[in-house]
Length: 110
Length: 111
Image (cartoon, rainbow over all chains, first blue to last red):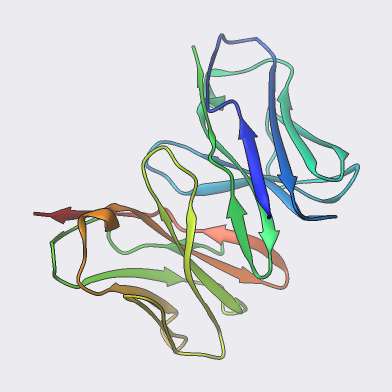
């Protein structure tokens, strides 16, 4: 079956610390993968998407980066977190015409 | 700039009543629209979609209406239940852009 895994579910990190969020998909090959961020009470903002290994497109300039080291793995990173990086981070993959989302990571930068 | 937005940020309905959630979009090139439901602390879940060459599509207890003339999209939920309480997002897609989400409407079902 096709599934998407995202971890951790919650994370509290100090300002200036690094970040690594991982997303993996199962049951598919060569998926289009996406990282979204959702601020409290707001919609979803597309951060990065990837159509294949090593291929990353950035939608907005920011303190974050993404990597696609393997076909089914998508990683969101930061070298030094800012307070404004707090939010709910969602990984998604394109299934047909729509997207399927992971369960999200709640990041709080303190 | 292009945007997808919602008319009302919150909506409260009595259990058993019908709910209507509205969405306005500005990208006339959008060819595909999706409604998502997001429960607290979870990722969005697909509800129903509609292509731009359609004006109505029905699912189980849900109906999506598309009015391209006024660039308006609505989600109707019949016989709203407590489990329908969530944030609902509309999203639009065109060939030139990735999926773009609106800001969401919080639906609260009252007992």
